Image (cartoon, rainbow, N blue to C red; front, side, top):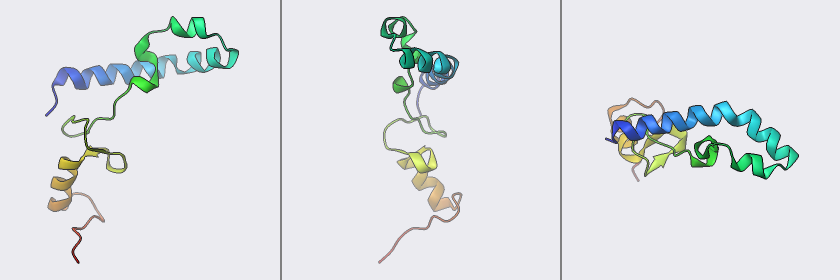
Length: 89
């Protein structure tokens, strides 16, 4: 499980990016890169990291299910994800 501080930091980044989204788009359209550089760094959506909703893990993230590979496997084997079955051939 990821540290609570890392998870909270990601929440702050997402909130800051949402707050400055309109202003960033306006400045980019104008081409005013000096003013864009003066905005907070974490207001850029590029700095956001995808994290597992259950464990907070950032590596092995599966976008379609918004969880890590380990959590996905546990949930799939327990039958918590509808439509996912273990393959065999």
